[in-house]
Amino acid sequence: MTTTAVPATGAPASGAPGIARRTSGNRETWVALGFIFPTVFGFVVFYLWPSLRGLGLSLTDYRFFADTSFVGLANYQRLLGDETFWNAMGVTVWYVVLNIGFQTVLAIGVAVLLHRLTRSVVIRGLVLMPYLVANVVVALVWFWMLDAQIGILNQVLSWFGIGPISFFGSEAWAIPTIAFVNTWRHLGYTALLIFAGLVMIPRIFYEAAKIDGASEWQMFRRITLPLLRPVLALVLVITVVGSFQVFDTVAVTTAGGPADATRVIQYYIFDLAFQRLDYGYASAVSVVLLVVLSVIAFVQLRLMRANESDLS
Amino acid sequence: MVTVDTAAPSSRIPVREAGRPTPGRVLAWACLFVIIAITLFPFYWMLRTALSNGTVLATAGTSWLPVDFTWGAFRRVLGLATVEEAQAEGGTGAAVDFWVYLRNSVVVAGLITAGQVFFGALAAYAFARMRWPGRDTVFFVILIALMVPPIFTQLPNFLLMRDLGILNTYAAIVLPFLFMHPFAVFFLRQFFLGISHEIEEAARLDGAGHIRTFFRIIVPMSWGPITTLALLQYVQAWNEYFWPLLVGSERSVRTLTVALGVFRSQTPQGNPDWPGLMAATLIAALPVLLLFIAFGRKIVDSIGFSGIK
Image (cartoon, rainbow over all chains, first blue to last red; front, side, top):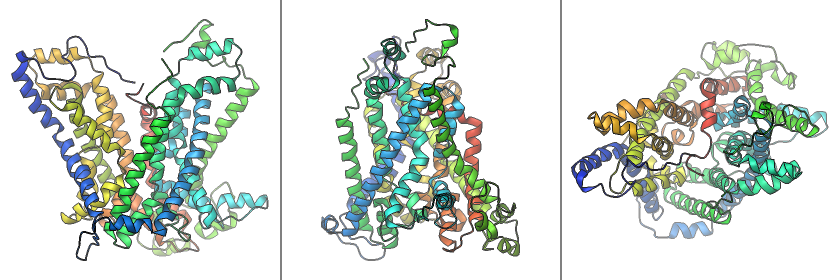
């Protein structure tokens, strides 16, 4: 929420410096270029150049050790008929739907609870804790707790005569399980983002509603949700785009199995590039992923009118 | 922010009905406690398992306390146990090199954090407080990099590291993150924008140039946000898995996250050394958790939407 007004003493934020200050302006430009040089260097060498190179590679049959030739759009053509690719897309979308579904609903709930009940930093900190731990650690802990034989959850379920369920080992359960595990890790972070949005809603609305005798649920439906929309849109863009790139949890627990049931798109790209050494094709798939994510982000922001607030 | 404070001073925190427990509030607190319990339980279970004896773990799967309490798992992860000791408690007895991985993680995360914060602060200052042609365009272009999925740039970056002949070195793991992170630039720029111009003007009158102003005035004034950023970037670098897996899988430079993945894939399918694995994950998570205990408020407060109204 740091919006800055340009103070009267300063020059306009952009535009050329005044004539009287031309020499100092020139000098300022040189110093500024020095200041941004490392960042621009990093951007050009590790973002821009690889992006172009990735696009280029996707048009070749590059395979590490063999000769490379330009194949035009053949990789993209191959992709259309590649069942493993479509399966990976399907698996990933199913994962995203489950993950984002659980996570968003729960996070809104937790955020509202926090907002209505307490300002305690300790409680917010506790909720956030899983997010600070590496994906790999989270995956391993749940891999253990959900173990089919001696995992704690199956032991508890057996008291009720359920199971044992092979959470990571069965085709039906593997994706929902991974979606749940990552929901556990990201819930607190998402809730705190939404919480930050809730704090921005002026309290006067709630006080007025209360005077009019509105219930908590009515206030949530009529005040909280509509006013939260722009924040929610941004949260969804961030979480959906992140969710599409699920990799660590899969790599550590199921490695794509059983029978491709968890071969999510990023794992498929990794597999193509580094296990099957089909680098050109892997690049094409990653270009498609980039396009898909850009379209999703754009559509979401448009649909949810993220940049228009009803708060004004 | 508008607060209507008509009631007694006890309603300093509005919305809250000064401690009067209604059924709804009790239910709400109960929900929150359930959530917190689910959040914390796995951490407890990690510890409980890590302190158990692997050979008898299966006999008491739901025991709240460690099964046949032992420090053995930590000892074998840290390389303090002999092969016989390790095997007696369900370990494989293979060398673990945990200290090497720990050192690698510390070095890699430290270098990345130092680079991102230092270079990020320089760039943020130029974007926030200096006037030069093309400034806003350059800033916008760098922000776009935030949206690009990492794997898209990482496949070609892997080739770059290979071409440079630095695969399996610290340099390869660190370089793509070292010079810039869009978030670091964005985060500090927001803060620098808010600093009063008068302070800079005063420094200017005393004959200080931009470089001097930056190092002598802006940086000392900004220790708070700089520390916060450093914490966030350190945690992120510490937890990174995909890139170090690509370019640093060799033992000598393997980070903890990559090593954990390797442990897991090397454990026998039927009967993994769960206590050993949990001890390792706990130790891998520990530095971050300690930072969090020390600086939790900074991290919690940093989560929000700077710059978005």
